[in-house]
Image (cartoon, rainbow, N blue to C red; front, side, top):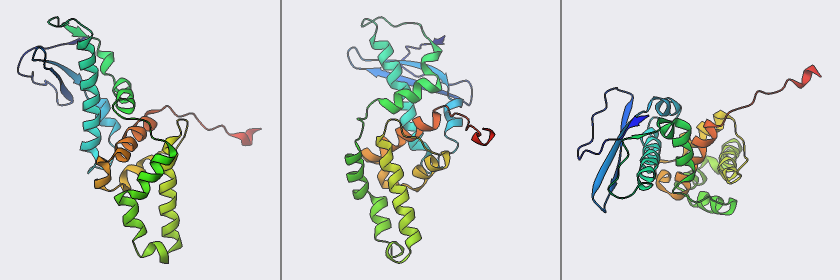
Amino acid sequence: MTTIYTTTTAPLATHEHDRVITATFRQPARSVHVIIDWSLVSDSLADVPSQYRPLVEAVMLTAAKDILSDYIKGYSVGVAPAEVDAGMFSYPAILDRAANAGIQWMSKEEITEQWKASATYQAWITDSRFKTMPKFAKAVNYYGDLIIKLAGKTSSYKDADLDLMLAKLQADDYSTPLGQFMVRRVEALKAKPTTDEVDVDML
């Protein structure tokens, strides 16, 4: 179990890998806090390009805050539980909330439209190499196909392609609905358990 603090000032984390999660409410005005082990989340973000890591981590922190907020809302106003099950803030729970909350699923058509309008796509198709180097154009189209395939709820990817999608997306696109959808989908896909390939040559 994890302690819930109801102090006006947030408590201090005692370990480097801990994070203080705070949920605030207006009626009545109050704040609640929990300290959770953030190491598994941090470890999972190790492959995310450093320039985009703060953004992805912010998405995860927001998800943790939403979990705490919903938990407190389950109690009557003025009644604050003293503890919460630590499992509610496990990495899978936070990831699931980040992947599914606060964002609508995008269809193939919506993703295609936003991809064509993105800063990343526009920069590539106006690059002189797009018309003069077939390999460059092929790479652009490959990247676009990866993004559009995110619309499929059963789509599968190689880890390298998941990393590629976040690494090559321009910073301006991260704040768009498409960028936010990509971050959540990629992180969810990276956390999915993988199955070992079967050596059919043994047959």
